[in-house]
Image (cartoon, rainbow, N blue to C red; front, side, top):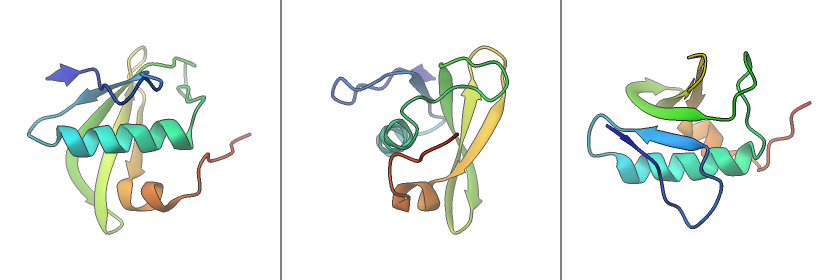
Length: 93
């Protein structure tokens, strides 16, 4: 199921895909990704639209989630445990 998160009027360029009842956790992750990467773009095609997928994969001591580009399908994986502790925004060049 695909749902567009509503988290207080912030950017909504992430759509959440949740295979089970983990919508609240995924919305928290979507918020953290928006805070960490305010100008998030696909590394391959430059699109700003992504699906956030809870794959059920555990990595580095916690949940790992995938960002999937809505245009080209590029998959990017993030460890939630590391991402939530990172100073935000994460500056990229």
